[in-house]
Length: 398
Image (tube, rainbow, N blue to C red; front, side, top):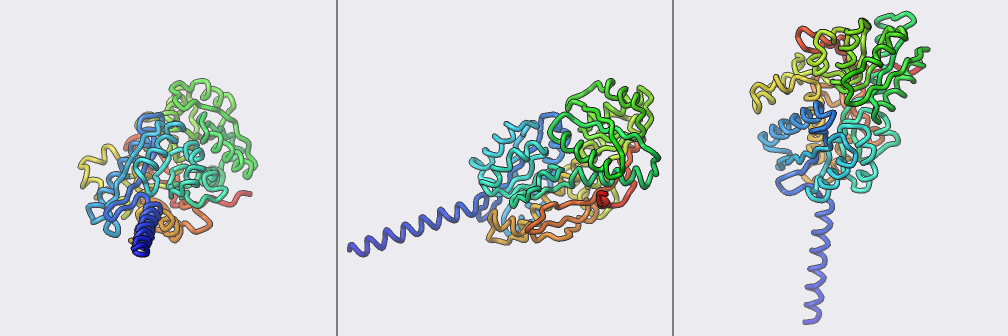
């Protein structure tokens, strides 16, 4: 009897340990569902980007689920609002991790929020697909972080190459106007490095994140005699600069990062946007590629009239993020957990979205993802951003 009782206890212990081990390995995964978290700005100063991206997540996952899910499981998205705030982003991460038990995270959608979560992501081993376009997100290498955007540094490389070699600008005087947040510091340093490689110096201006009146900055650039302007700001800030440039007769081209390369700039600035050119790793809603045609078909199925709300680049950005994630989940197979998802994402090579963006590649030692950009010129009459280049890699720095 004693031997039988001891055997029974051993059996119970083994079963308990097995269940605990399975729970740990399969966080966010059940036999019929996968929990995915999202952190983005829904109500803060960059909500014009965050809200549209999250809507793209929702429609993409709804389509996947209606097609039967992935390996027999449906995707459940839990979206949290960071309000473009680091404390709110940390709180959202902890809620998604401990309450919702997410398998993977989409976001955050800012450099500062992403960087502050690095240690939490590493400690908890959460596969994370942020939209944070700076190399600091990947250097040094981070096993669980898979950026889904290009990098601002690449955008400036393509932009400066265009100004110097395509426009053949002679002795250009270039101004750099940046937003007064973490990404502004990063982008300014990048622009300075690229300008130096072409033997150029930059005039600097700083613009607050919620700026409405930028008279002093525009007049300062005009007094400096600038011939070209580089800007890193959200759409309202970039539009404010364009409107004041028109007001004070500063008739020079302005080139923006992907943060400013959105149709919202044209909507807000109107005719004043005629000299605006932006760099972006994403196509727009209305472009005639097979990939964008599929985006439109799926989106209009779930939301007729969607073109009125989604015809900005933020929607394409938001489509690519879950597309990459789901490709990784498919490759990971039925026996899914965080580590297998990481390993699967690292097998993605030259993933072709058929024109939504450039080719996507991750490896076990490189998680850069997107390196290609196009330049787009504003067309105030149509309200569209018209591509003026093909997908381009940045040149080597001199």
